[in-house]
Amino acid sequence: MARSRTTARLTALLLVLAPVAIFLLSFLVGRYPVPPLTVIRVIAAQLLPVTPDWPAVVGSVLLDVRLPRVVAAMLVGGGLAMSGACYQGVFRNPLVSPFTLGVSAGAGFGAAIAILLFQQRYAVQLCAFAFGLAAVGLCFCMGRMYRAGSTLVLVLAGVIVGSLFTALLSLLKYVADPNSKLPVIEFWLLGSLSSVSMADIAAVAAVAVPSAAILLLLRWRITLLAMGDEQARILGVEAGRLRAVVVLLATLIAASTVAISGIIGWVGLVIPHFARILVGPDFRRLLPATLSLGACYLLVIDDIARSVTAAEIPLGILTALVGAPAFMLLLRRGSLGWA
Image (cartoon, rainbow, N blue to C red; front, side, top):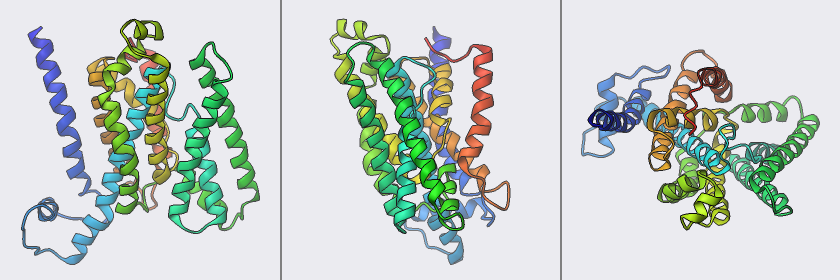
């Protein structure tokens, strides 16, 4: 018992310190080298009265280029991972992800429309967010047509809605200008944080942070929901209403993060399983662990994407290259941590 408590405390400490360490180390990654002490002093200058004695270009690189990207990677990674954990708990299925109900397909379609019709980046983000929510709303409308097997119907509705928006997206790509519009659409769909700004982060945080905070407050109820509707009702939890609230909040997180990053897959599918292996299936510990691991994972992936080659590698490619073999290994070892 004492050993279990010690292990749990060490795991919790690691989950707290790892994001901080990777956050600081990420400022050292890039084509413009900056000494570690300079990085610490520049960051400290934002909180403490430190006299700046470094070149102006160093401050610009760290604060205007790397800081927004680092914060965005942690926000998107943590948000997608937490959203995926909630989806898996609600549907009691280890194979679902934040994109199961068509968020990615709807967001991709909305972004493609905005790229074809408008020139502003904010229009792309707004349309991606709106159509991502619309796709999930359409799934719920289809689910209300049936009374039995609501979770199964929602998953099947997600397949239908996702296929519909994917077909519409293919139609837009077919009519798009192959020299100007089509490459922009394809690059957005592959996922990237290259053009993110602090204004983008503020807009996403205004939606994602309150949603995540509410999910953290409801995490013990989500544990009951993952045990089954009947068990949840016995313990005084209205399963249907709670499921709708959790799916809504998780969808808000997923749609808002995808709006600034593009389609980044596998984060919301794989990371929750690693978190379950570390802390178990209880959502009181699972959601904070998933948030920490997701932020660390995507931040490391983004560091690799912007430093390995001269041309930046899209994040969606790297997360698939890493996530698919990792998930296959978990399946082979039977270590999904699903109990």
